[in-house]
Image 1 (cartoon, rainbow, N blue to C red):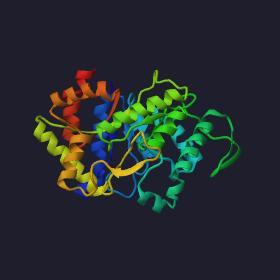
Image 2 (cartoon, helix red, strand yellow; image 1 turned 120 degrees about the vertical axis):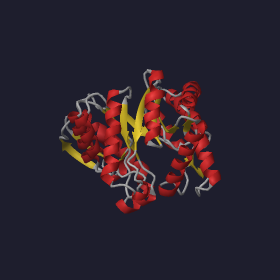
Image 3 (cartoon, rainbow, N blue to C red; image 1 turned 180 degrees about the vertical axis):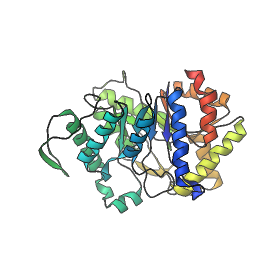
Length: 339
């Protein structure tokens, strides 16, 4: 099993200077660099204290400069908000500056505030996202780019620099809804799985993805699916559960007040219902913590991960620690058992 960190830059209550939030994240990255983590995946968000990192590509250059081994993932570049050629240039430049350590994770986003503020029609989010992904890859693979699409048209453009990794960095598409999972599988893309779906839904969507991928003539061989999971680890199960509940409360208060979508592989469209409630009430918080967060003592978390390796199956865990102590305890007492 591979391990990475899905790094948020949360600023709850603005209780400390924002520079402190960044510095703590950089110190965490330093620990990751010298331990057994594969990558840090940087979360892009806008207009929310849930995570104050509007430019993960700029953040990635800073991390590249202070590390030598750790891979740098984007989780995710919110494609509808970018000019696709600018996005191709930025990711390629980061790949060059990092010595070829980029994992490009890309998604369409779902926050209505972001779409409204950036002036992007949400109804166009899927076609814009998919066209952007195609343009970026063509810009990387071809010496010069000619493209005629619904939203973008280019004629004989040389896009520079090219990525150091050839033909391009590994590409991962964020896929939460049934339709998104199905489309990615049919086109042979590797998916990223989100931190807010319940464990059972992750297993269902993972099986559905593999089925559709193989139907389309692609293979799972050599393909690893990163799964983002919130984690809360402490000396005792009770302490860890309290961390999980506090983390859930913050997320509902700052980012998830409208709930999250649960995908049913039997449906053709996304089911826009919350599997965990919508108001952040105690029952909702308890359900989120118990069914979405990996929590417990180091021994319990180790056992849970072993079980998930079999049942999901979990091969690549993107940890989203719900506290600094959770990160430290996981790194010191759980991670070494898998190395």
